[in-house]
Amino acid sequence: MPRQTGTYQILGETHFFIPFPLPPINPPFELSAEIMSCYGNANAALTLLNDMGKKLPNAQRFIKAYVIKEALLTSSIEGIHTTLLDVFTYPLEGKEKPNKNTQLVLNYTAALDVAVEMLVKEKLPLTSRIILAAHKTLLTAHGDQTATPGSYRKQSVKVGTLIPPPAPEILSLMAALEKYINEPSELPPLIRAGLAHVQFETIHPFLDGNGRIGRLLIVLMLMNDRLLQNPILYPSYYLKKHHTEYYQKLDAVRSNGDFEGWILFYLRAITESAHDAYQRAQEIEILEKSLVEKIKTISQGSKTKETIIQALNHLFEQPVIGISQLSEAMNIAYNTASTIIKQYLALNILVANNQQKRNKTYRFDAYLKLLEKDFSI
Image 1: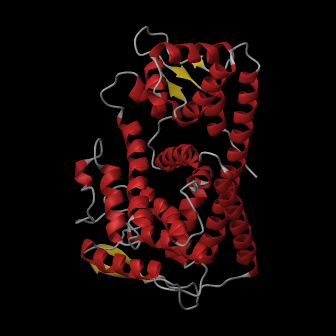
Image 2: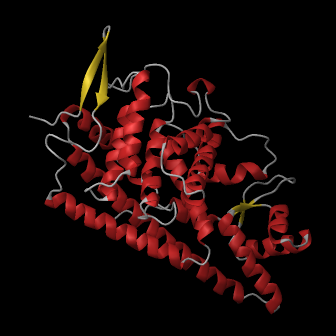
């Protein structure tokens, strides 16, 4: 007999599925040899990633790039498509607003910032207060206001073959999930984060944004349990590549009680995503060192070379840039910034991003390609 994971509440002709609270029971969750092997691999990958993060000379620029990468991937799973180039370019070309999809990706980065600020700096517990604040930020501005940003849904929804719990049940179900997230458990925190994700998706507490907030919850739980020092993991990297299996594994929890099958898939997602992020950080570090050596070969005075090298840091933070933006970022004269960009063009570090006379921008192609590269195991 498969494990029972919830009950159905019948209202009229509608069968609402109401999940039992975590942890799984009858039988309890099984830490099989296969799960423990995958768990060990995932833990090792996270340890390597955290160690890399500690060694980086400027961690903040990596965090920004990786957060944008997760924003793109998690949004893409929901059919929201834009590009790294769009995200980095739109503020520089005089556009009042980005297109809707780009805005929603930017909203995700802002939602993560809000949640991390509350969790890490304000030291608040990981409860509905943080989840609702992140949801409000995610869906405000260019979002569908009928999705009631920052509020749990007040109406019924259907997700594939699943009809999630009726709205009056959401508060109690989310309270039970909060309790599970914050109370001690015999299960390892990494596995508990995976269980919390599937529970959140089954409750489906919002009209829109459930997938993105549910995947954000994984990162927040790993940070809350100090398994991740900074939000430099992008689990949607693996979940997008295997999106059909992702949804099948989530659904199998409800239909067959297969929490173990979901956790195996989830642990592989953590392992491969952490591996990819680690490899990407290494490649970016190698790229920066090679560019510094290239700049040292140019026929300029040592002070000029040092300024040009310093400008590299801003390119890694903003890989699509204009002369005015570089001038402002470095607090240098416009003509000096223009000279630096000309040197970068001559060294093939930058290429022209557009041909217009006003608001001309330049693209750091080598870095953008590294952010897009697939480092599969």
